Image (cartoon, rainbow, N blue to C red; front, side):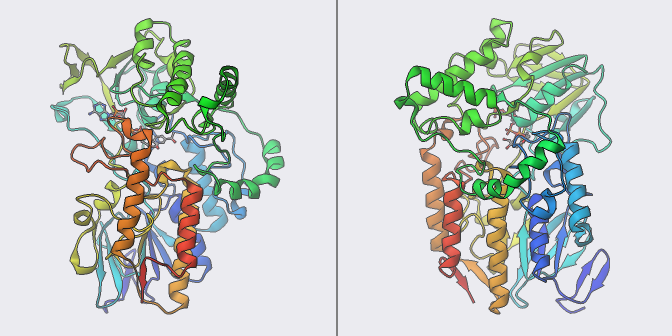
Length: 546
Ligand code: N01
C-alpha cells in the first residue's frame, strides 16, 4: 500500500482523508458537520461506543449539566428547531438522547468510527500528512488532525496506600460501569466533593444504607434552581435563540448574562443584599457570574460574597459541627476560585442519619483496607463500594497521553514538560496542521462548553478552508507567538483570585507532579473570540503558512 492509502474499519480506502477528528462529543460533531458540508473528506475516531463525548463516560447517578439550555445547545438551527428539552439543566440520559437526535438530523454516525481510541499521531514530513493509529491497529493519514477530546479525557484516581487490596467494588465517576451499579442497601464511600462528588452524593444518599463522604475541601456549592421545561414555553422562546447564541459569544463566560458593571464596594448594603438574593433565587451560575464586577479580583468584595453564601448554607444544616465543616467560618479559598457546583438538595443530605461527613483536613485517609477506608484517627470506615469522585488530569492529560510527535520527532508530552505552550489555545509550534478545541490556554472551563467549542471550531474550519482554497500545505505556529500567548495566559491567571486555591485543576495543582500554572485563558470569551478572529483576518499573523 502507498503511504497515503488508508484503512478505515478494516477496509482500505483509496481517497485519503482531508481531516481526522478525534472525539465525537459536542466539538467533534460540530466540526464534522461543517467540514463535511464544505465537501472535505472527514472521519471521526471515537474511543467510546457512541456519540456524546463526556456524557458517554460520566453517567454516575445524578450526572447532569451545570449550564442551562439553550445556552448548552449547539447553535445549529437544524438542531434546535425541532428539539425540546424537559429540564433546564438536563441529565445525562437526556443529553444522550440529544446526541441520538443529532445523529437522526445530521446523519453523523456514518462518518464516525467508534471504539477507536487514538494512541499515536506522528507527522510524516515526506508526505505532509499525519499518520494516526487507533488502539485496534487502524491507521489513517489525514492532512489535518483536529483533537476534540475535551478537558476531562483522563480521569485521576489518587495513589492511596492499599487501594488495590479493597475487596468491595470501586469506580471512578468518569469510568462508571456501562451496565450500572446497584447501590441500594450498600455502605458507600465517596472520595471527593467537586462537581462529580456533589452530584453523586445528593443523588444516592436516599438509596444507600450508609454514605460516608470523604471531603478534603468543602464545595462552595450554589443552588441550581432546576426547572421543568415544556414544549410550549420553548417554542415561544425559539424566536430569541439566534440572539441568544449570538449574545453568548459576546460575554465573558460564554453565557447570555454578564456580571453587573458596578463594583461591590461601590454598592450600598441594601443594594448588595437584594442583588445577592436575586441571583441566588434565579439560580445557576448567576450568583458567581452575575455578581459584582470586582468579586474575582478584590478580596474584601469576595469575602462578602462568601459570607452571604455561608449564612445561606448554614441555615440548611441542623448540626453546628456540620455547619463548620461544610461552610467554614474561614473561607477555604476565595469564592469562585474553584468552580462552585450547582446543587439541588446537597446540604439537606448531611442532615440524614445515614450520612457521615469525614473531614480529611482534620483526619486524612491513612490507607484503603480490604474492608474500607482507614482514617488517621484509627477509625476504619467499613464499605461495600468506594466511588472516586477525584477528578481529572484535566486539560492537558488527555492530549499528552496520546503519543503525538511533530516535526523533528519531538513528542507533545516532552514539549510540555516545563509548561504548556500553544498559539491561541488552538495549535502548538512544530505540530503542523494539528488543532485542538476546548483544551489548554483557551477559555475552556472559563466558558460555557458549546460557546467555546463553536468559536474555536469556526476558526479551525475557516483556517482549513483557507489552506485548501489557497493550495497551502502547512500551517504551523511560530514559537515567538506562542511564547507571547503563554505570557498572556500566565499573567491573567496570576491576577485572578482563583490562584489562591491550594489544589485546583485550573492550575494543575490537583495532580501530584504536574506543572502548576494557569492552564486556561481567563481573559474572557468575547476577548478571546476577538483576538483569534483578528489573527485570522490579518492573514494568520504568528503562524507560518506555506
Ligand atoms: O473533579 P474536581 P470533578 N484525597 O477536580 C478531591 C466538570 N464537571 O470531577 O478540592 C481526597 O473538581 C478533591 O479535593 P480538593 C466541571 O468543570 C462538570 O468533580 O482538591 N480527596 C475534589 O473535592 C468540574 O469542575 C459537571 O481538596 C481528593 C475532588 O476530589 C470538572 O469537571 C459534572 C483527592 C475532585 O474534584 C471536574 O469535576 C462533573 C485525594 N487524594 C464534572 N484527590 C457538570 O456540569 C482529589 N480529591 C455538572
